[in-house]
Image (cartoon, rainbow, N blue to C red; front, side):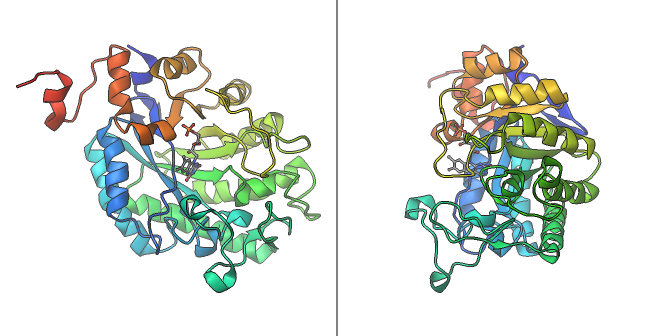
Length: 357
Ligand SMILES: Cc1cc2nc3c(=O)[nH]c(=O)nc-3n(C[C@H](O)[C@H](O)[C@H](O)COP(=O)(O)O)c2cc1C
């Protein structure tokens, strides 16, 4: 059997294959409540055969949204709206997963398809938050968090986790990547604090770790907790793979089960060598040096390439984003390419066999 279609068990959750739909913001809701678009978008990828379908970055608070159109998990209406989508994904045999996030200093912007620029307060934007008042590119500097803000944000992550559980999700991912709030604590380029949350590596990882500990306490023992990190800022003097190993070890000790290894996003001027599988070496390093399961992501498009990443033990699973937008049935097509007999949705079986009437 191809490794790509080998089931994968972490804690009490088994995915039928090692293909994950990477979280992708849809900017499709004005109040953070999932609707028809989310059902069709996520449902199609479940019908398409992905073992794990991860819902986009879902804000733990209104100011934690990247844009005013982000999905949210800061109130019960938002949690309840996700429940039927979760149920549908399960019925299709996919493991429903969700990423919870706080956008930090990259919040209060317009969706990319509307230009992606900062939204001013008078136009419905808000004051952003960060470890220090260091801006991202041309966006306004964030307000530096004090201890009471941090307590509030830990609570917001905990409550979002509880809502994810009530909605029926089986995998929860904390977003510590792409220049959003928790990543800005990690990187010395955005964290200039002089208290116990800044300076040394031990101090910089403290708040993200506290969030993970808080979430792990309420996320059920039998369900996996993932963390997505940017393994490097791709900038001299920034966050890097060696620091990622230290973070991953600390996270593993606190009950985090899987590291989802992305990169970049902290500063706009980084030069990123984007090419097929360009982030996989960092996933492999973390897997080897920490001994924790990892997910590889980034320009994985070809079934043979995905199989190679798994067979060479660089990662335990692969996550695909843009290729899944091009082809929601990628897993079914990959199975055909790798000569694997996987089940199709019963209503589509006549197409699988290639019978023409
Ligand atoms: C439309 C779109 C939305 C995205 N939204 C998120 C997100 O919500 N959370 C996240 O961690 N990454 C997000 N990403 C990054 C992807 O999950 C993925 O890491 C990245 O696109 C690289 O994978 P790919 O080459 O397969 O597209 C997004 C990417 C795209 C294209």
